[in-house]
Image (cartoon, rainbow, N blue to C red; front, side):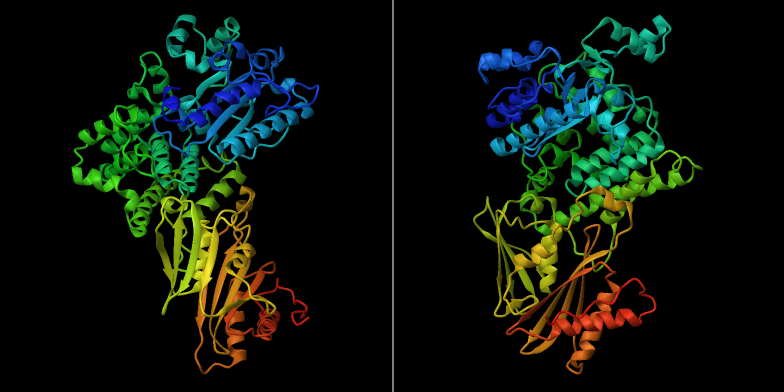
Length: 633
């Protein structure tokens, strides 16, 4: 809580204080109000929480609202925050993630739907009034105890490694209000078992019978090897948004599975022991400090050649990667960083180089991220080798659907293909880009951008082909058409089917949505979904053709043809149709553009006719149906 108060802006801290109150009350003109007799608000024993008392003291809400709008039959029996917000790795981008624990026996489908409606209204309010992303995870106490994360009366579809979700909960949870997890007060459970001769479940039941303000969310006894592999896969997938955070967590999981016995003790158990000795502003018992020490010690003993990589990711994590800067003086975060710099004997030049990360060239940022991702791939390959060496261990214990999704998402993340559109750095992805301008130079196209926090125009990418630029923008989601503008400078006009001049924004919209809207798409292998074809003209002759193809996993691939002068128009159409055939299927949508001085009225029909004729006579392509020739109409 001290770290939250220290680092949250006053506005975000106000929201953090409001959320529990909004969950507890149900009042007109306040976010989360539900006009229904079925009560879906209230937190157990909220009146005795610090949030209740603080809201009264600071007059965050009128006193009569807080005191009179609760209920004797609260819907929520426990509210907890989970994640980095309560640690010194908190950053401006930290989400508010809450576990909302209920007793499903007390809920009808209607009451549960009303609770979801209440939470959704609070989410909208937080986003619109405070610009803060919040996630509520509604969970049943009994399901959580049994490591089940199914929705109300629904099937469990979660692909995250369940056992590590609970481990992270116990390692990072903040008690907001409601009942206290009994796990957190059983630090001496081994002694209790010896004295009472009871099992862990017996001790837990005995404690729960004595205290009404405790709740049993279960224990973690061991980490199965297949869950270690699943956890590594999960963080390889997560590395796309933050490779530093992903590598740290994946290394922790890897040490659980393949380190010595000392490394297999769960971090949450060490954190619990620290409850007894923790003091205010004591960085020594921070959950992430414990994590850092674990993975450093693991590499010192098991894999010293990779130790420098781990030191770099820890340094970046403490400095708020990707917006790297030195933490404030005399804060727990700064004290720990200074300790590491001294212990690791980092030179001033080394520290200076790391702290200047934001000014590194894009190529250097990408090289560093490639090193991080390669390390993730090494751990994955090692774990796969160990799993495959154990007969039937993996296939019989991991749910097939989740394994298929994680395996295919990992394949997408690690796939190497010379035609695949590359990614940009995490730093660039997180910039607030106001304008993108694509400019034609003599031998290539270049992309200039204007970032909100920087008045300079920056050239960030160049490519020999226009669709190489467009694909790169699409792949990295750099263009937010609601807040940014995209322009296109060339002496030629861009035509789509028909003779209307169009623009790059239209190209962007043709590929939306590019990224899958649901993980369920990864159950199946990728198949081709869309293809954009750009024909470049010199006077009235087609000089080259570009093909930007996407698949159902959201990957983009670029193929090109430069035509020789000797080829006639039909030969050119045949070559283009061949590329289309090789990178399409029955359901592929085609979008044909022309970059020319004047619109070519015949070419779209000719290309599509050639493509269909080729599909009919190709014995290997039996799934493509002949399409009607309506292009001219």
